[in-house]
Image (cartoon, rainbow, N blue to C red; front, side):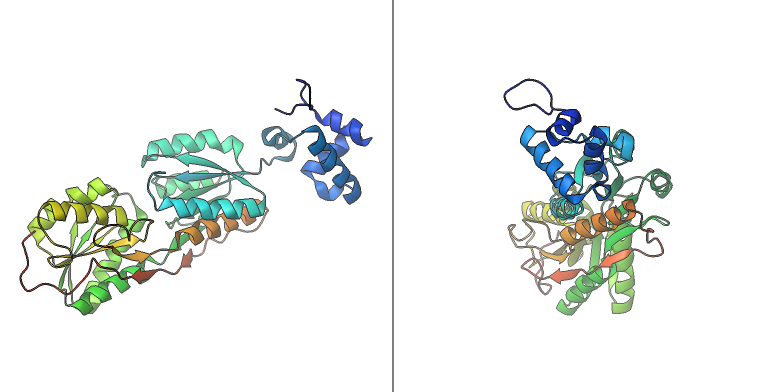
Length: 341
């Protein structure tokens, strides 16, 4: 609440107007439509507002301007490190564009996501959906109500920003093939994940072109415990190499395999995806596909801010950012004496 210094009385737009000797409507325009106020007057109003401790209420301002200068950032799981750089990138771009972020954590639930968005809609000028778990149809319905950009997924008719999943997976498959691996298992993530479907398709296509054998295991939760639980499936398949949906599953695999006495990479090589913070801290350090997650958040927010400002949304094809393979210690040539998984 705005307070006059030294008193308990709230500072209002009328106090600022009296301080500057202008009408309250002029003060209102100085904050909501500064281009319609003389620059010298607008500067005097801002200085007076700061001196008195007056700050605009974005929700109240929305009544007259239709804008709150707030953007909703919807995250499937705030504890997943892959979203840390997405949030940072979006936050930096939002600040640059004059917005603040309202963070919605959906805990990997499409229902929570829908309910959170319904509550957020009256307070935001647009939505950035990072890894949405809702159906394409649901996303399109929301995009009819407010500007929307989808991050890490493609939804027909809605602007999207994605990493180059196909290129990243192709590099991982080429790397494993060059080491001599012929049988590769893809450990899948959430069944409703668009990225998971794209990565499995890229594994199959690369296997066909490189004359490798690809097998699917899963789906599994995109967590460390999900990766540990995947070891039982690998025991049946006996691959020499594994590509995991994400780094958390890959790290869970490292733990689960170690508990079974299986050596990585001597007995089986493991590749992750995302290059999250900590992927090089585990033992062995994880070979992974590095997706530009901070750039993903920044680029998506920039496109959303432009859309809010009136730009025509680009929906013909997604904005695709490059991905690269980071080779560390969890991959090697297949051992001649392998311990069974």
